[in-house]
Image 1 (cartoon, rainbow, N blue to C red):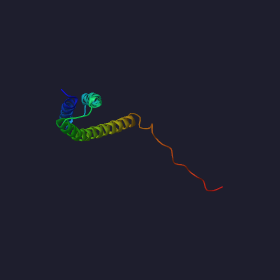
Image 2 (cartoon, rainbow, N blue to C red):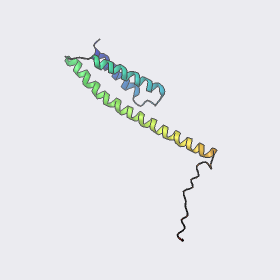
Image 3 (cartoon, helix red, strand yellow):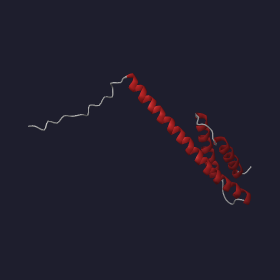
Image 4 (cartoon, rainbow, N blue to C red):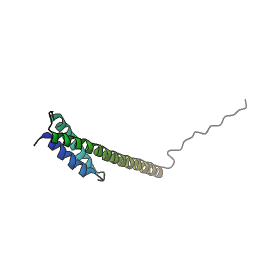
Length: 113
């Protein structure tokens, strides 16, 4: 099996796997594995390519854009989750020690001499 066919099938399976999938540690690990495997496959592909292989590469490039969009969606989901955790932590800390973060920023300036 040619390297382009392997790249084609790997990209196709990865796209179908991550589309609308919820964020999880397993999914992130699979994405890392896919990216490393994909980089190795791309380095092994060398011209000249047959007409069928060129079509497969064009489809891979199209799917790559969709994968990037899905990764952006996952990144946004993780970003929102981190913000919520930070907010929860701040509320929890304030609840445990409400007088910890009192700021004394008011000053009195006496204009008389």
